[in-house]
Image 1 (cartoon, rainbow, N blue to C red):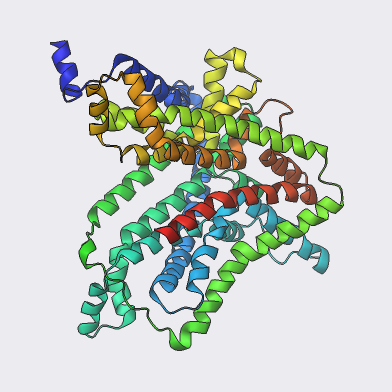
Image 2: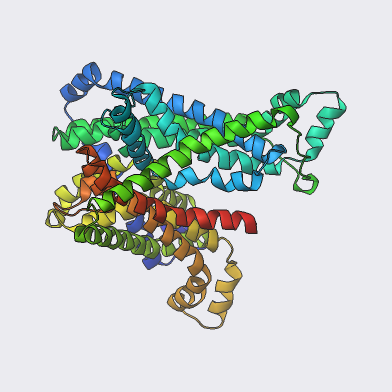
Amino acid sequence: MGNRIWLKIWNAKPPRTVLFIINAIIALIMASPILYIVIRAASAPLEKWKVLFATRIPLILWDTLSLAGAVAAFTTVIGVSLAYLVECTDLSCRKFLKVALTLPLAIPPYIGALTYIIIFGKRGVLFSLLGSSVIDIYSFWAVTFVMSMFTFPYVFLIVSAALRKISANYEEAGRSCGASYSSIFRHITLPLIMPAVISGNIIVFFYIISDFGAVAMLRYTTFTSSVYFQMIGKLDRSGAAILSILTIGLGLIVLLIKNQIQKNRAFFINPKSNRPPKAIKLEKYKILCMIFAVVVMFFSIILPLSTLILWSIKGILAGAVTVKMAGYIMNSLYVSIGAAAITMLFSVPIAYFKFRHPSKITTLMNNMCHLGLIIPGTLLALGMVFVVNRYFNWLVGSQLILIFGLALRYFSRSLQSAEASMSLISPIIDETAYSLGKRFGSVLFRVILPSILPGVLSGGALVLVSSMKELPVTLMLRPAGFDTLAVRIWVQASDGFYTQAAPSGLLIVIVSLLPLYFLTKKEKGG
């Protein structure tokens, strides 16, 4: 009876016991920090919940939602406007703008925030020149503006892709009815791209509620920064766990709302009738639209990059780059390569399991492995601290905790790349190999792995770059005295030593340009 149920679960194709155990262990490892946070929060004294709800939580919730909502709205306006101008009009330099407007993604928001503090802060360039602050860089609207300048490309990229898929037939039908371009945009184009707009909007919203470095540098309070300071500053683990569980709950609610909205706004486009529409002539508005694009580029790319370069030169001349810098680079590479290696190793069995043994159990395991994608770094690191202190106390103070923390944080990115490659490998290949007498290990390592290796390596490279930029996980899990480039930026910027922080920031930006280069290269090739 039990064997029959087991076969039914796997559609008569049950996995090998070893493969199932390996996948179950990996899934539990990936989900354990979050599961332990839930357990820790649930076991916290009721009085602790009451105190936090009576004092801190309402204000933190308002601050988090207001910032995330404002940035999401601002980036939607900027991203949709620029995507429409680049994809649907005769705006000058469109090919250049397609690439240039993605460059802010190469600047981690905490480094972008650093450049704005250098210029507009109380000890910044403008204050030194004018004797007073032009704007309060730590105000709500200033924080909203800074965060928007480095996150609008998420909306821009997704909406641009959606606009390229819309057939000219829709526009022509509207024009034949006498509708103006503005009317066509409101009643035809906008509804068609609305799922893409919502997706970009949600990505930005999640990014803001999960970001730590930029909001902390700009002295703004959100759930993630509160978790960090509750843990590090007050050493209050129960309080940090409660704030963490509320952050996770907030994210899940937003995700459910997004899925419901997109479900009610489903559109299907026939690829056979997909003719690109003719570029709309901007005529007298062309200069105005170009000014808008240039202004966005100035505040999101030119100003922060030029500031970073100039202050890096200033720092180098002042002796900021020393032998210790090489140590920070080596530390960054060491933990990043270690994290990438773990994610590549784990992604192969998980990806194979998903496509060769689909079931509800497989889906559950796969979702557990993708938790790092939606859980803020501070929360994941907090969960790691709980698990290690409780079950692996001998690991406390070692670099392995940091490496595993980074691997858990970015495993989803590596897994997505491996899954994309695995989805192209037909099961017939496995069956043919088995019919020739090959054993499972031989099929996996000699047939499947060579076929998906490019995707696995691409995912590993993405994890490596992401790990070098990661701030909260590194801050919370690093051994004492173990500094990376990201940590040095945080420490030096917090102490006001901007010339010392700038070279490290510039190096991280240069490294971050690599995946963007391959992304734009792929776009051109596709």
